[in-house]
Structures are given as structure tokens and as C-alpha cells.
Amino acid sequence: MTQRVFITGGASGLGRALALHYAREGAKVCVGDINPEAGKVTEEELTAAGGDALYLPCDVRRVTDLEQVRSELEQRWGGVDIVVNNAGVASAGSIEETTMTDWEWILDINVLGVVRGCKVFTPLFKRQGAGTFVNVASMAGLMLAPMMDSYNVSKAGVIALSETLSLELRDAGIKVCCVCPSFFQTNLASGMRSDLPGIQQNINGLMKRSTVTAEDVAGDIARAVKQGDFWVLPHQRERRLWLLKRHAPRAFDYIMHRESRRWMKRLSGG
Image 1 (tube, rainbow, N blue to C red):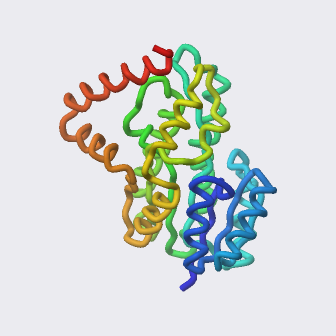
Image 2: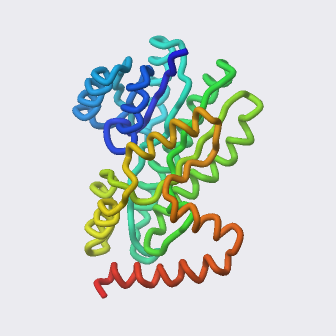
């Protein structure tokens, strides 16, 4: 059976890589994005890759946008099998310096955007008796490094929502997959909000040095969906740290405190 996939923020970064992955497998792929130019280009790329492609404008801050996408896909495809709540933004800063405006901005997109996606498509999945939510969080929601307060909280919220829905919706035939990558090359830092000097250059440097690509993460996600796995933790070092946090919290705290001091010194230019 041909898979039917909808991806928010699907015109760039990880969303685009995942869309291309599914298109190459012959899936029907809809990318939702706030950038119509990039959306149309991605639609053409997906078609060329072998998929039945569609771009629809979608701002995850508006539940009506998601409802319109759902209605359109029901009419065109008769339903959706996989909804990827991928759209997200980044911010950096301390609890003192990050403004409440920036807190509200990132939570509206990163947390409530995923909430809206799950809320809108759950009734459809229930009618179908099946469906998978792929919620893109981050290792930031598990590792919780300093000076990333609002971003960490937003991604921890996605993890909490995903774990909750995995139990809440399981008996309805609905699966949930939670993706927690660390740094890999993407455009996330380009729209980052922060008053920290040099933060974008630091993060871009970490992304460029990563050996994990967006295509690698997309492949991990597709395998996890196929196997019905909940966690997608693509980075080996961070996966080990997460296991250490669970099983030896004091050792984890020592390592993270040491690494945090280096990180904060680097951000301060020391």
C-alpha cells in the first residue's frame, strides 16, 4: 500500500530530507510550510524523485491551516498514514536575558505547533484505525544544556507530549515516534533568536563538524516508523549520555557540569 505522508516545515532541513526519502520510496508526500517559494521547489523535487507530491501553505501557529491541510488530504488521498510534526525554531539565552516575547514565540511554534498537529489529525487517525505521529524534538530536551533555556523547555515539552500520546492513543491503533537528534547540518540557526554574541557561529560550527546528516536522520526516522519504535536517537555519543543520565545520574551530572562550564566559557568569549 502506498504510504501517505504529511510533513510540517517540509520545505527545508530535516523536513525536506525526510520528504525526499519517502518520495524515493514512491510515497504520496505533502509538505506544509510557511515559505511558498521553497514549498513549490520542494514539490518539484519530490515529483522528480518519484513521489506523488503536493505543497500546501501551513503555519503551525494556526489550527485552521492544519485543518485545511487535513481536509485537502482526505479529499485527495482518502486519508494520511504518517504526520510529521517537524516545524520548529531555535533560541538561546539565559533565564535573565531571554524575553517573555521570545519564550511565547518558541513555545507557540515548537510545543503548541506539535499539539495542534496531533489534535487536528487524531480524529482522522481514529476513523482510519491507524496512523503514526512523528514528533521532532531534540537531544536538547533530554540533555538540557545551560543558556538554551527556552529551547530546552520547548523540546522537553514535545517529548512529554509524545510519551503521553503513545500511551493515550495506542489502543486506537495510533503510534507515536519521538525524534531527538543532536547537532547536524541544517538551517535551524538561521532564524535563531538570541542576544548571545557569536551564538549562531558557534552552533553552525557544531553542525558542520557533525558526521550525521539530515539524510541519516531521515533514514533513522523511516526505519523507526516501519518498526513501530518510539525513540529515534541518531547520535551515538548523546545516546550514551542519555543512558548514563538514566542509570547513573550523579556521573551524568558531573560530566554535564564540566561540559557546561566549557560551553558557557566559549559563549562568553573566554
